Amino acid sequence: MNWKIRRFGQAVFTVWAVMTLAFFLTRMMPGNPVDAFVARVGPELDNPQEAYELAEVYMNINPQDPIHVAYVDYMIAMLQGDMGQSISQNASVAAIMGDAIPWTVFVMSWAIFIGFAVGISLGALMAYWEGSKFDVAITGYATIITSIPFYVLALLLLITFAYRLNWFPTSGRRPEGVEAGFNLPFMLGVIHHAALPVFSMFVGSGVASLTMRGNSIRVLGEDYLRVARLRGLADRTIAVRYVARNAILPMYTGLMIAIGSMFGGAIVLEEIFSYRGMGYYMIQAVRARDYPLMMGAFTVITIAVVIALLIADLTYGKIDPRAGSENREAF
Image (cartoon, helix red, strand yellow):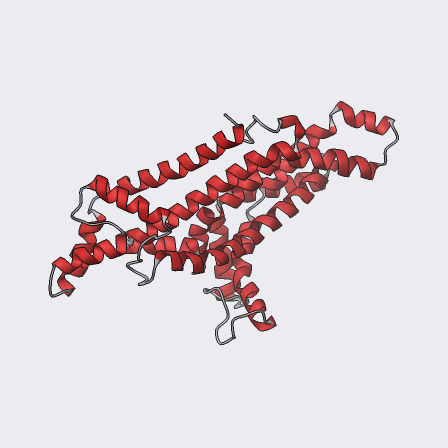
């Protein structure tokens, strides 16, 4: 069987398996979600039977059906793009996800991009000046900062720069009283609101510099670099074409995994800054026991991770011929 078709089939199976597992685990949780919903809205209705009809509308399942019938109905609805109706937000889950995803992608993509760009640059310099004061200082900083959870840094930044110095807003994702659109005040306001979440992720991303340093030191000891110097190639050519390229390649899979995991990684960060993205709504769904919204967010996170890993697998052989192009996985 063609390797790409088999790998695509594995990705589809993974998404199906995670969605199935999440459905049955949710139904097996103490306080069945359907019963909890009926118990919540039933007393507010004149006819208790209407609570079951509302549960069917919100959750895409008939509460009185056996669990295997409910599972089939739920999967059919998901395949049709119907994620149900949020109980706590009073809107469709698809609409909430459609509104939240761009904001999460905006914050997390900038955090990942800046973190990798700065980390790769610092790691290359640390390897070039291995053993110097600069190398020792940055290695110590990166080791300490990597051991501190990013949400601790986020809380410290929020308290210092938002609450005490009032340099940044304490919550929200857009400026109030400014017309939304591609105008300068609105875009500056959006960047102002996203600055602290991005900076907290960037400050805590010291692992990229340590990884780049280790990869560069390993590459600097390779025989082909000595051959390149004997051929009289310029240091700039050796640094860019041989050292940097071969040191960055092993980090490609880590970058793709970070991109795929951005939605999951935003859960705590967006809650701290009250930034209304995927993570914020995920936390709100858990608190309100809003199972349709919880399942929708969980499904989006799963699909994002699987797609990122699939892209990493399919493209790694293209950028690194040593890994092969047809039958090697990138992780």
